[in-house]
Image 1 (cartoon, rainbow, N blue to C red):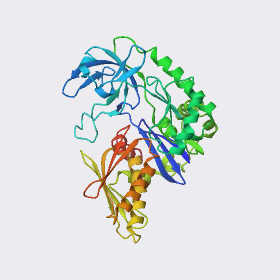
Image 2 (image 1 turned 180 degrees about the horizontal axis):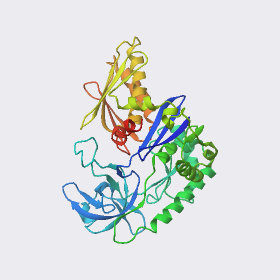
Image 3 (image 1 turned 45 degrees about the horizontal axis):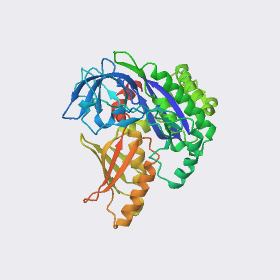
Image 4 (image 1 turned 60 degrees about the vertical axis):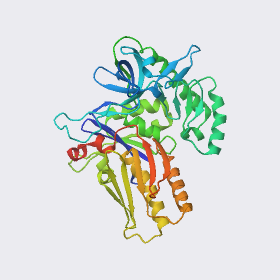
Length: 412
């Protein structure tokens, strides 16, 4: 697998390509005002009793929404307790300074185009601060080491429970799935790095003015972290700025990837070519903005986004395979499309009608296996009475179409 890094109209693109196929894509846009994972020293602006939430001033310009369930209350023994037992107004008050972390991103709309696409919602924040490494998520306020809840395989969890013993000197470490086949000394090294970073962050959590303390992971860091459990053959880029960004992250979290960073000088016969065009993946990216996906066998998958949910319809078309085979292929493609398009919220999938509960169970298990590799949390809630599969995906960032905007047309 190769990682390709490109600059586009001031934004940052990072793509993962396996055998000429696009398998991962992360985008940072200049319109993004709040990045997922960013830590702020914020001021409580007001308490909303109806929502049982607080609106907090993040940096003087942006406002975040802190729900009661995301409040952390420090106890006398130094541990933290989640909020929710009492109204948030009894825990926080306007003017109070608190440390929060963005749980979603915020992309502002163009004021000259008020009806343009864009979520334009207040980003959600949490007082449970975490730092993301390659194999370890450091949650200093949890105070205990554990295995990520997203890992469902019992054998893997049993193996990783033994690995937790090596982290006894560092509390608050959450092992990601990628750490399963990693040497314990690498995990210890990363945990210590994250612990030291947390110590530095704490020194900035003071004062009476709202401010950004640490920006969340950029597109490069997200894609390298998400693919840490897979083999990366090379990281291609064309600018020294990107080289330094990649080298800095890899030097800290992935020394084994440093020799794989490959600066390229692209010549296009007198024409200036971008890296994505040179590697012939532009068409694949453009197809992600179509409301349909055509399969090799003649079938299709229709994807329709609404304000309330995303509806996905599977059609057999000219596909001559059995219903089970068509649905299986569609399930794998849908999981891929949700990742690449970065769709989230409620997702309703209308597969071809199955004959038995056994077939539906098998199809659901296939989807669950595919979702286990998704960097975002995906929950399958089961089948509705109308035969639709109900899924919920919790995004970190805005949908691809909102992040990409018209940058591709402008650049190419």
